[in-house]
Amino acid sequence: MKLYIKQRVFSFVDKFSVKDENGTDRYFVEGQIISLGKKLHIFDSEHNEIALVKQKIVSLRPKFVVEVNGEEVAEIVKKITFFKPQYYVEGLGWNVEGDFFAHDYVIESNGAEVVSIHKAWVSWGDTFELDIADGNDEVTALAVVLAIDAVLHSQNATASAHFGNI
Image (cartoon, rainbow, N blue to C red; front, top):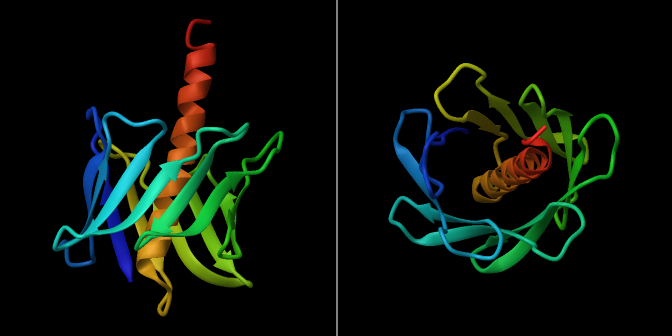
């Protein structure tokens, strides 16, 4: 199953749809304007909330929690590394490998690919293609990918705040 995400460039709040291979809206993602930490609500095509990605505020490293149908299923944590960013997904046993700077990475479980992610370089806004392996929970996979993207954005925002005036 392939899903496509195109995020808006200029928006006060994250709000975008996730489309399937036919261009049909399959999921809707909405952030919150006022909240402690970043929160992304994921809705199905009938606008029922099915997942939530939320930032853990009290943490030395960026951490995001994934809830599916009100139950916490995963926590995305950035490993402390010097050269190449690395992430792991607690709760699901998923490993995240790839080149995050080139926006190409894979999430695996016990050596089997769960989802591969490719981010287009030349686009207006962030555009992602998710290729979810058959038999995997696409809602959980989508939420984990959005959480990893949120970790990357929170790191970039922190770096800009610290080094923006140089």
